[in-house]
Length: 426
Image (cartoon, rainbow, N blue to C red; front, side, top):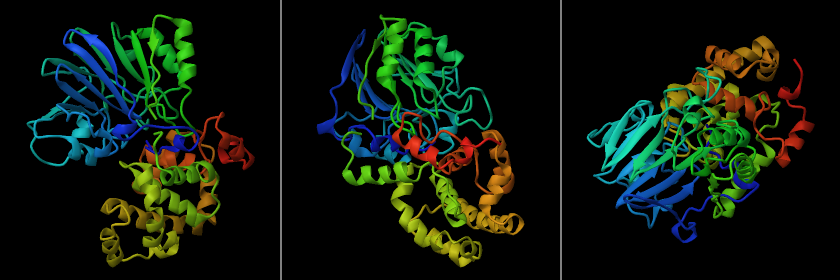
């Protein structure tokens, strides 16, 4: 999933330095006060009894200035807004215990594993007297091409001082969430198209009835989820549940960063593309975003264009081994050999599609409409390095699948005027 900050362009979002960090909350436990410090999107810090736990730390060391170093780090999933290897390497100490699912462990650098605990759904570890249980997090309906498949990632339930804290990870209102009981504090995700909308989130919360719930991970592609609406829905069903709204989104983002995201959100994301070279460009950028933040790709777009001959399909298709090595040595792009090879081989494939169908765009039109699952199957058969999320993001970004913007986003109506493919009847 894109860690793209697209919502920052239309509304305020997450603090990132100590001077601008909101005041932490506290909850009494048998081990003393549990201090809750929301940070950024899905990142938060929990401190109790001298133990500090980081959940999904991202955004670099700057976000954690003034906070005690982590005794335990929890990572829920492999996506860049949860698993940020550079941040992990910057903040962990020699004594930090890392608790992760197998999919995350597989992506960690080789090294000492004595401070690594790998949990499958349903497994438990005890760290410094705190129990940590991994529970499922996944999309519904279950599908091998879902953005979050069952068993890959972990939500977590932490037991500390007689209190239970639930961190949902990226999930929908799954049966495993709805059947939870006696949760004191819950962090529940809500955004589209990656997790669930506020109605589904509120319904799930009303099913397991935590004493306190924090909406988090509510930055989506079309804007921030309506957390006030979520609060109203929850309290209409149960006034006894305390809904704590905190600014889990980046109020202090620099004007330069805001402008970067605003330009993409307002002018490009979800709008149809009719130029084959630009379609190829978008596909290459989406492939390169895999495992990284979309902001990283946006910052490098100009150097990507220069390095890849401005995404001229014929030129890229003719790249030699010398060009591959040139790209591998270029710090202005993502120096991943598999992604570089995919760009070159995909350019060759598109040339063949142009010969057979007249253009890459006509090939796409020929196969419209398809479900996301059908598109993924087709792309995997046709192109390289095109997994489910890459294909979904590519097709949403060019108007073949819905989801780039919600109906209440100001850009939605502008895109509707362009008559994107997903709005056309088959």
